[in-house]
Image (tube, rainbow, N blue to C red; front, side, top):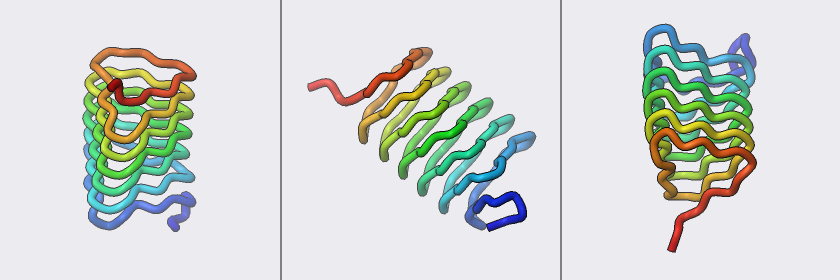
Length: 115
């Protein structure tokens, strides 16, 4: 743990003007794009955050992709999920492997694969 009470794995790539705030864990092989903000969040292994992504009070599973402009607050995103460009999630749960379409906004929902 650092002086900011967070852990960022040594092989994490962090873009310019991005901030990993206090109380965060960023696991191995994650990539954080430019102008991102991550606060009070756990990022699992091999996650990719595009540019201008904001994640607060959330748990993000392994192999998750948050494309450019996504905003995730108070949510759980399970492994292998993809949030396409400019998705907005607040207080949601996203099941494993789900793709959330671009520019969608969800509040207090459970998102799962449609069969």
